[in-house]
Length: 181
Image (cartoon, rainbow, N blue to C red; front, side):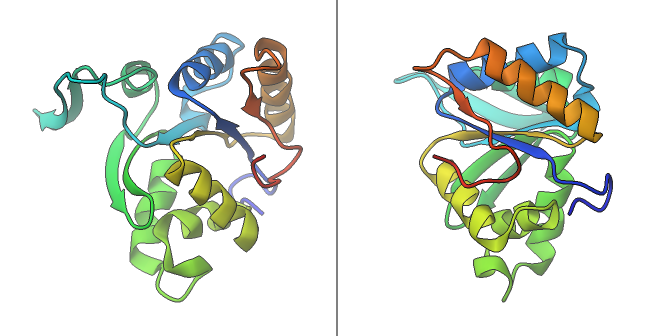
């Protein structure tokens, strides 16, 4: 269980950057608080173009051809971060879940497959197997959108995502923390 809200968050698995960007915009437009949404995935740069993730004046910046949805996530969500997490690799994250990832860096050994990402997912309510499934989805270049809020807001987010995703290009929105399809 998520100790902050006493229930499980919504974890949506998005097959690509466009689906994640549409999902994120929809959730924000439908009134979900940016401080309750997180986006996690591997950064994708447009083929043959340079891009970067760096800090200037204490703020994390993106430049170049870093694919959507990261530009919007960086400006609208809290706590942007970059992590190198075996076995997934380079991960870009924004939102409150970045704090769970950072905590997972300090305590993953011997827990949930020795993975900081799996430990972070487990810490917010995913089972051990689900956490590893979500981590594997990230390793396969899929993205995660997490909604950590009240049960009513989580249900509203589930409805919003189901409404905007066409059947051929959808985010997997499990009823709780079911493993990604």
